[in-house]
Amino acid sequence: MAAEPLITTYLEMRSPDQLRPKRADARFQVREKRNRDWQFNRDLYFRVGEQWDWIDKRLWTDEQWKEYLAAELCTFAGYYDDVLAGYYELRWDTDGGVEIAYFGLLPEFIGRGLGAALLTSAIEKAWARRGGTVPTRVWVHTCNRDHPQALANYQARGMIVYKVDEEF
Image 1 (cartoon, rainbow, N blue to C red):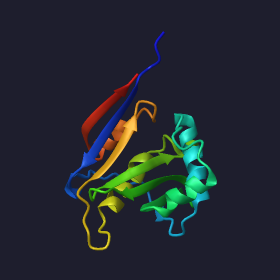
Image 2: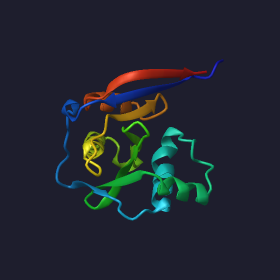
Image 3: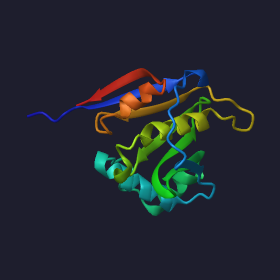
């Protein structure tokens, strides 16, 4: 029996006007992590990604995590009633776009409608001017091994599929 292929879908938004926001109640707040704390990113990568078999950074050393955070990366954390609920990372690419590099909720917060609000925040923060520069696009990729509603959430917020890769 053949293994299920890995299907990666790439989505983008070329204008902030494409965003179809969804908000949560005031108990959900997103805050930027201004202090670069590689352990925070590492721990959330493992906690959020464990259920989806995120493996690309699983074997990284502490030094690799430190280098990753030293790059053009901004981290935001979502809190529900001041309890950590999820996070996202934004990274400027070499073409002037902003990638939503990692995005997800902790298992205990899935199914509460917070994913749409967290994604709305990620897209809004990605479109925010950085040093007077407006991004050319906001983009993300997801795969068939992510949350079953991930692709639908990205599309519901206004992101458009521009490429699909399949690996066997």
